Image 1 (cartoon, helix red, strand yellow):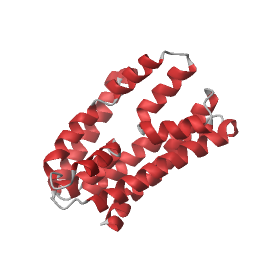
Image 2: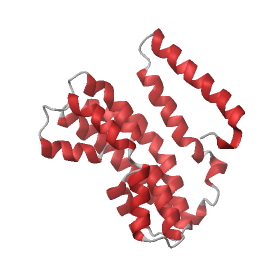
Image 3: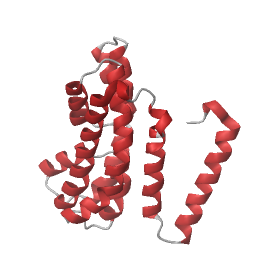
Amino acid sequence: DIVKGLKTAAPIALGYLPLGMAFGILAAQQGLTALDVFFLSLLVYAGSAQFIASAMLASGAAAAAIILTTFLVNLRHLLMSASLAPYLKHIPSPVLAWISMGITDETYAAGYPEASSGKASPAFYLGLNGLSHFSWIFSTVLGCLLGSRIPDPEKWGLDFALPAMFIALLFMQLKNKKDILVALAAGILSVVLAFVMKDNFN
């Protein structure tokens, strides 16, 4: 089960490398130290929230404002946790508390098929969450240490890391014709909306 979790986490870990480095570089440019970035990645472990928190820290925002913003940005995790809960009732509560810390958009998407099958075990999540979290911490700290040596992350395509990772995760979920049709429809709709809404599309 640990090996299965590690294999499931492999594309996430690879996707986190450029994305985490992009965050680390940005955080260094905003005045955060490698130790700051390490604890942000260890304790917060949420890419979008960390990007926002880093910018707010650099602007001198109050701690309460940063905490509230991070909470609001990550409210979707409540929905993800709620959808997993029925399938993980066989796992003890203390272990569930640890698993919940490792829920991200990516680990949720990659791990849901295993959970919904009723076969998910603590060992599976040890592999899935452990490798993913390690990769995120490693890449963000590495990016921070590199700092000003990579002044323009977008030049290297690092800003495309997150979409590329989700595309890879999507392909892992395509099991039949219906899945493929839904994925194609969502992709076409996204492209159309991107052109129609232009700068307002996110």
